[in-house]
Image (cartoon, rainbow, N blue to C red; front, top):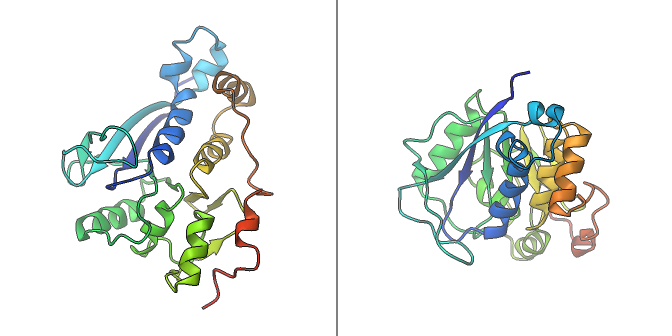
Amino acid sequence: MVNPVWSFGVLLLPGFQLLDMAGTIDYFQLHSFEYMNGIGLATPDIINNAPIINWHFIAQDMNPVNTSVGPPVPPTVTFETAPKLDYLLVPGSDPFVVLPSVATKFVQKTFHDPSLKGLLTVCTGSMVLAQTGILDNHKVCSNKMVLKYASEHGLINHNVTWIGDRRWNQDGKVWSAAGVTAGLDLAAGFLENWIAEDGRKLAQDLFEYHPNPRFPDRFASILAGVDVNKK
């Protein structure tokens, strides 16, 4: 059996939430061929089914990008030099920041490229992406506290249908997670499509983590009585 190969991009926007990225990609990598083949605990079937993940950390230039906490993260490629991607992950940053035009063009071009199989957003990453138009007419999760604030202050993008009672959601090739730690649950839900149960069980035991379901979401009460889609 030939292991699948994934070209996985991570969009590094200034001030992005570190756990949005680190937790999500670490959980993906836990299921990878590189990891499973090296730990001495995986069966041949698990190893042979594990994806080979090539990670690309993408920014406007090659300068390290400041995060919400901790050391800056160095990009590996720029918007101009990024390869064709199978998947693009966008961790959350300032939900009301205006993206520079080069970032908007990169996101639009990448999303509409037929080679992109999935766009994954975590937390406020979806609110940032909404301004590019690529999420128009999609059902999307985001950070509920921020959605509530945006609704109360007239800052909601109504071209997107926001979901307030899910931990994560899939709509076509758009995969979106709610608040920060929901990125782990999004990754777990995504991997159900690719990794057999024995591989996922091994990864969960290694991570000492049990995925939360997409629904019900214990944090849905944050938006109780708030219609974020009301114009």
